[in-house]
Every structure is written in structure tokens, then in C-alpha cells.
Length: 180
Image (tube, rainbow, N blue to C red; front, side):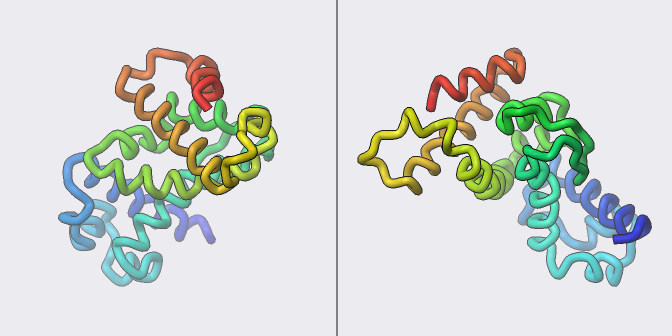
């Protein structure tokens, strides 16, 4: 993607994020998005088939960096040095509120984002299962165990947000590991 295309895409993402802060996703129109992003309708559709495809692309770009947790220097919407623990890495991004990701996860549309986030998180957890093996009962099916770990992470994140994110990313990561 060239620089002009990337800037257009980022403008459309920013417009959607701003609109989501005050309006339900179902009530946002493509017209509102293109007006806010200051792009033409043809430009929008050159990048995204539908408003739903835009949402999927936004979520993919916001969440994909956690899948690259092993890379020491990765770039999607963020640039960062990934720590050794992918969960700590994610909590640090959330604390910094990179690209308003925290706003999206705590806005009135948060179920949309949490669902997509959980799908991405499944991939992360699968890659991190050795950290959790000692805690898993042999009776539990692996897909149940993965879903459980993801649910605990999401609940830890919600608790942290609801309590004003007063704990450090290191502390909330420790809480997460204790709760699994």
C-alpha cells in the first residue's frame, strides 16, 4: 500500500472511531464516514466493500499487532518493542490507549470490538498454551480451555477498565495469570 492509500485508509478509520464515540454502529452511514474522513464515495468503496468490511479491517489493524508479539519491532497502526509476554504487551498498549483502542473497547459499541478481539485473542492463546499447561485438567477439551483463557483475559480487561486502570500493566497481567 502506498503512502496516499495508507493516509486515506487511516482517515477513514479515524472517522469511524470518532463516530463510534457517540453513535451506535448500526446508525452510522457510509455518508457520515466519508464526510468526516473528507474522501469521496468511490474512494471509500475502493478501500472497503461495505461499512461492515470497514469495521472488520479496523479491528484487524488494531488487534493484529498482538499476533506479532514475538517480533521485537513491528508496525501496524502502532510501533513498539514487544516484551517477552504477549499479554503484558497488550495491557501496555491499552494503558497508552493507542489509536483510541481503549475508547473502542469501552464505548457503547464495545460488544462488536470485544467479539472481534476475542477471535484474535484465540490465536494468541493457542500460541501461548505452554504457559498454561500446568493449570489445565486433562478432562478439559483443548478448545474449551482456550475459550476459558480468552474469557478470563476479557473479564480481566473489563474489570481493569471499570476500575479506572489503576493497576500497572504488570500487575494486571499478574492478576490475569492468577485467575486462569
